[in-house]
Length: 471
Image 1 (cartoon, rainbow, N blue to C red):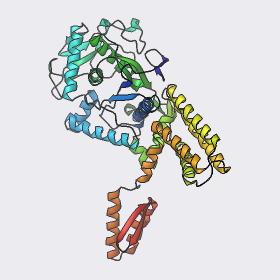
Image 2: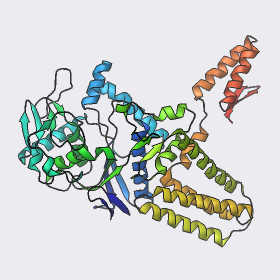
Image 3: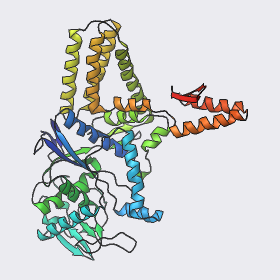
Image 4: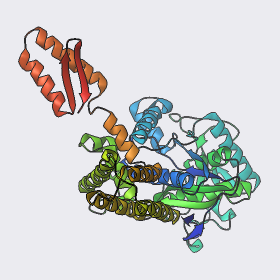
């Protein structure tokens, strides 16, 4: 398995350090608003990495993905909403889980929240270690990291040390690229902010300390194998994570750093909440597209290349999935016929090629190419009566193996199994139709039937009552 390591700017052979278990930390959502599909481009890519490490490379995976539920933005927005920080962020944690399930993201082993007491205590312990190692100073009730105290600060982002200004500091959790300043570890709070005191004085954690502390606490200390996130986190967030973790432990924090490139709008502008040009997963579903098509779009471009999003890309994904499912349907309908050695050889070659592509820094476009080459071969073979029922079982098994990584076939099948209208709504409409017929308003009853029919739900009147099924 080879992965591109942002730290070294090159592809390297990857294997876990301990016990064939990959210990991986991925930066999750800051839950001040619902995640958009630019965020989910990263999460889908890292879901693919997780699946590849397990299904292709054969490793076990222990993954931690956090929720940042305390920072400048979560505090600001919860205050605007007039609710507690926990109540406000709960709604967006729930929304993330809903969107993640819709996109077929596997549940990870740990989803810590920064405001959980065990995590807050681990942050304070890390700050105390940094202080003991000479990396901090206090000012106006806040504790800062002194970047001049760490000789290799900037190694992930490849910062020019000539541009670092000793003594300049910043309180904000987020700041501009290459603006290298001393950053806040534990922040003095105002009366309208949540406050904790576990040994650093009353205050709350800075954004950067949260991930360093949670990664080391939940993944059994340094070094972890992989730290991953969006490319916009390289600086300052991940750079500052390294400074904190390595300043406190005097050990390498993470052996590999994996970063996913931006999702861009058609005009080449990054999708971001700050620019107001975002679409959520629900926005995509509301336009009539399926989550499986969105997952396909988000994984179809290599994770280190920018992905340009437009509605046409979803149409193209839908066509690709129709080709895939058309082939699967033909295979499932085959009866009789002999088995063919050429088919078995072709399937085995496709399996090997698919795995080889993914082992090469997650070359998903190449892996998808293997899948569609196999589809072309299968369709041609069926047309020429050169593929029998026994061959079909072998091919279908291969597609199932591919999907353990891609996750689009199982997701589409789950979508197909669900009605396009929620069950409770169907049942209410059936009751409304029954009432309309009882009052002899047959036009209204027919309108309900026609509406459900147009939305993919067929009604059938029986002596025992009205039943429904998905068309």
